[in-house]
Length: 445
Ligand code: ASP
Ligand code: MG
Image (cartoon, rainbow, N blue to C red; front, side):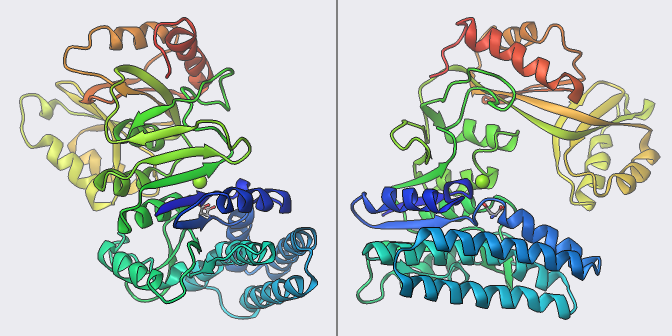
């Protein structure tokens, strides 16, 4: 069994949908296709939710109308068979009737999750009917029937495996199955989701549950690049990478893969291949348990980071100080990304500042607290060893013109993190690119 996940841009128009159908129907063997919503849909559904929550029904209605219009146009363009066109138009009418129901009923958190689920339900139905029209035998199964999270929001792996295996064992099962990414049920049986960008996570959870041969994530770029292609020119795709490096890069800003999706694949040793729908023959990136490539492989950046420094004379020679500090972050369920310490101060970074005010209020009992916003973490990922000398020097040399706020080295053998002010992000990424990859110091492959 191979799992294929297609992101929103891969399904962004009738033309793209045809291309995806072509890709999956030309492969042999058991295939399970996981689909995101068409590009822009989930963002629009979030906007509609915001308008409904703010009691701005008129504006919500306009957005709903526009979204429906884009689907009607895709349907018109996509299908040749008029009966199938009528069927799919009816499905769309039903779903948009349901969405419009939120205009008159009170809008709450459950309604919002139901609303967000509609994008994947629509794209999977459109795709499934297109396969039917093409004469490609396939089944459509609802992720709501097997994808479940527990009370802590963690995937219920046992349930997912049992239910999915059962659904795939039904008589006359076709080799090709279509389902939705992102959406799931929670421990209370309500419709929920795996958080934004979560379709990748669906794909690797399914891959793990079915012990798949491979999970392929199809997007609009040919794999992990050695630097951020939105900022730096002439970046290169990396052909092989370990799960550990992929985890660092996806967590620290490389948008191609959802960070949570790495773990299920790593735990079950399922290779993940990143492919480009716009260029299906490009090699992409293969992510495996261990590669044998040493040295720096890639650079990524994560912005909107807040740095917090706690300075206290009491930290001098004291034990327990860090525990008190960390407990405060734990109480407010806020995870820390980077830490640096000196004898009298500790600096940490967070990316979620929802509880920043509460956290800093509590931290003040332990010392003087300083907060800096608009920071960026630059992650320099690769495979380093105990005796890999010169790597840190290379990084710092490349960044010699950039004021550095924090450095974290040695936390793992796969990452050096540097915190800078976001103003310097572009310059830092460009400098790293020139020094690490272009000048030939390291080979990106
Ligand atoms: N459609 C969802 C989102 O936009 C999930 C995904 O695309 O991965 O966040
Ligand atoms: Mg994505």
